[in-house]
Image (tube, rainbow, N blue to C red; front, side):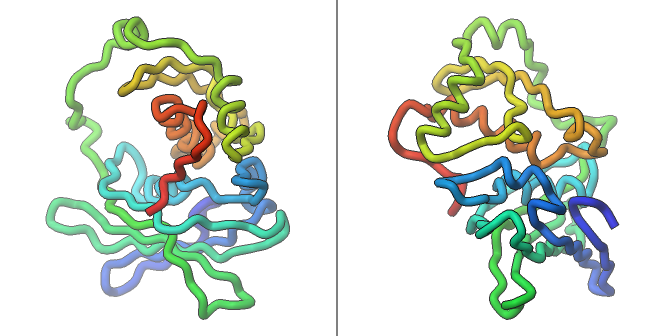
Length: 219
């Protein structure tokens, strides 16, 4: 049993099934992510499940967020299940994440799908080194408070667990972000969903948070 993934079952077909209960009690960071007032599981959580399942370093491909998981209250619980297919010839494993409530277990919702694969730590598949000083010189600084205020104006309220962004720099195509996670978030052996979400928040700086439309990463 692992805190985020839950219990694990290895099937004879080569699939691995992980199942856990999601609520604000079992995953306290969820209460700090509200969209239009509703507790909403960050989409980055589903990608983080795949990362936790295979370990790092790894590579995610073709991740699609299909439907958001909303919680009517902090006490509401959802069963969350991730099915990890057997690896293909290249080592990639397809994954799907579903949820349902015990009171209505016949209604199951698919939230995300994609592929994940372990990478050879000794042979990273990198496109080239990034010189952070040079990158920052061609970007414009943006205070984290400005980013969070922009999100709030668009209907996305982020509490302390989701405010790991300390500073960022951006232009129309690139962004560089400095993160400082809450201490309890950094105790995970793999990246915590709240920290992963902070990385994706930086995209908001590129798309812009000054307008009136909120872009959620769902199909």
